[in-house]
Structure formats: C-alpha cells, structure tokens
Image (cartoon, rainbow, N blue to C red; front, side, top):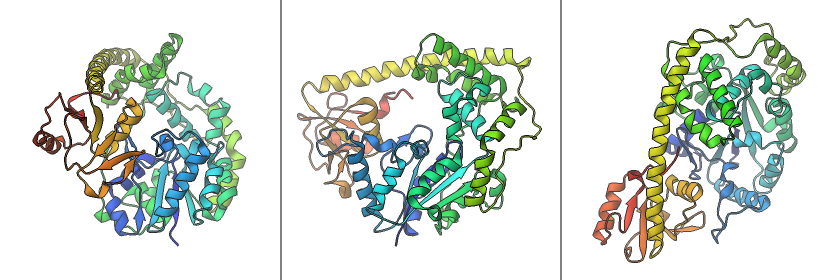
Length: 448
C-alpha cells in the first residue's frame, strides 16, 4: 500500500532546502514512485512548497473562500486519498509544526478515514541553538524587539521547543511506530554527500538516484550577526513605539539586513549566555530524555549547559555598523516607493479595464495564486496553452485552452514567466498591448 509522508517542518531545520529539492525534482520522484503535489504555493526567495495549512484559502466551486475548517480538511483529505492510489505522497509544511495544539490531531483523524498508511517525519534541534536561531530569524524578518533573554522567558515561545510534547500529540493519533524523529545536526550529515536531503530521502524510504537530481543553491538565509542583530532589534523596538506595523518594519529594516550580509569580515559570539543555557536545560531536560528513549533510539539529545562559547557584547564595531545600516535603509525606502508607484499603475490599469471588460489570466501557475490571494484579483477564466489543463479549475476558476479569445470581451493579464509567446498569440487575435492586455513582468506589482 502506498503511503502519505508528512514532513512537519520544524523552524530552522532546513525545511526550505528540502522543499526546494522536492519541487525541483518532481519528475525524478515520480519515476521512483513518489509524488510531491504542486498546490501552486510559492514564497519569495524560498520557492514552491505544497503546504496544507497555508493552503487554507482555497476556493469552492462558487469561488467563495472556504472558511469552515471541517469542510476544508475533509476536501483536502479526500484529495490526498485519491492521489495516494497512484504513488507515495510527500507533503511538507512548516505551518504544520505550529498547528499541533490547535487542530493537527483532528486533521490526521480525518485523513485516516480515507487512507491508513500515514507517516510523519520531523527534525529536532537542540533547544538553545534552536531558540537563538528562531529569535534571530524573527528579529531579521519580523517585528521581534525583545532581547534574547526576554524571548527565552516567554512561555508561548518555550512551548514551541518542547518537541516531546508536540510529537506525543501526533503519536496519540498515528502511533509512535509511524513517527520518524531525526536530530538536526550538520555534523551527522557529513557522511552524506547531499546532506540533509539525502538523510531525508533515506529516512522515508525513498529510493531515489540523487545523481539524477537538481540541487539549486537558492536563497542563502544567513543569520544577523552581532551588532547587526542588535541594530535590527532596536529598530524593531523603535517602530513598535511609533505604532508602525510589522509590514513596514520588514521593508524598511532591509537596510540593516543588507549591511549585515555584506560585512563578511565581521563575526560575533552567541547571544545565549550561560544563565539562559542553564534555564533551558532545566526546562527541557526531562522531556529530552523521554524523546531520546522513545524516538531517537537513545541517541543523546541534551543541552550542553557547560559549553564554553563567546557571548556577544557591543564593541567599537557598533558605530560603523549603524552608519552602514542607515545608508541601506535610505536606499531601501527608495526601492519601496518605486514598487508602490508601479503597483498602483498596475492596479489602475486593471480597474479601468474592468469597467468595460471581464478579467482573464493567461497561464495557470503560481502567479495566479499570488494575484488572487495577495491582490484579490479574481478572473472569470484562466487560459493556458497546456491542453492537459483544459477543463480543470484553479480555486474554482475554470481553465481552458485559448483557441480564440475576444479582445472586446476580455482584458488579459499574462501570468507566465515566458510572456513573449503569449504576446504573439494575443496580437494574432487582435489584442493591443496595454489596451487589451498587460504582462506582470513590466510592473513591480508585488511589494516583496
């Protein structure tokens, strides 16, 4: 019997590396009896992933967003139950990790009604390293303004790193024999030429010839080091005091991130000091022992509270870093203004066209998802040159092969990477650029 494998992506355990590999090598996977379904989800700088939780804003046949969780879960479970009849299925979603206490057990109970061979794989990382990396990520990309000490005192944050409790929640539904727990430690991947990707494939029993696979480097998500992390934290704190929302924080803080990324000669120590380590050790010690005994084949999984490490302190480098960051922030502001202006021109064209015509997309791919959910642009129809897609629908919107499109009836938005071929087709049908169609690639329509 084929199986469904859920990769529950613990934050800061190379989840996006695994997802990018799976997406880029779907053909190789298929030849080996595995499927990584393309649910049209894409994140900037990360790539495609087939998240189930993130896919909550799907559409029903009437194009109304499904908000009832039971209805949504039931539809997804039926869909996966049909897919797994042909091949083994891999689903990867970082949001699954955060869903455990809320509704993940109910999801798996529902899925078991449709298919009973379900496995879960999850990577765990020693908590002091995990929480420091998570804090750094939230300072860098979000609006986190607390010090690392304050962050590691937050009960809601501490629950995220209680792996044993989270895994036991899943085990209560699927059984511990269906849970694969792996330690995220780069040293233990050294025997594998392909690192965590090879470890992942071996762990789930996917016999894949990695020599035939693509390995794209993709987005290098470096942590903010030393003074740059402190600068961004202070920046976030100031924005919070001024009442600026997290979206604006993310954009204008890019200058600090860029300055930090460019300063290759600067390194600093850990933000976790000995006192924090001891506190975390006491918090997780008992459950870490249980985790090791039950799920890790007694592999040691303990915080080293006696580890000697260089702890970060502000130094003379701080002022230089601040100046670099200020210039980068100013430059980033100018980019944001340019994007906003271009986006508004794009929206104005569409709103003007909607007065006399219906909106159509050309290309049933990830850009459709972006336009629908990020900008709330809902087309009447989606044209696509792939005849195999004709007759299907995307979020309740019909997909059809464009034998003939009426320029008096439709205003077309080209939503494919290679827009030139589509442009030629439209012009042959009598469409005029800008008046009857536009291509996304001439506008900075996204703000990220």
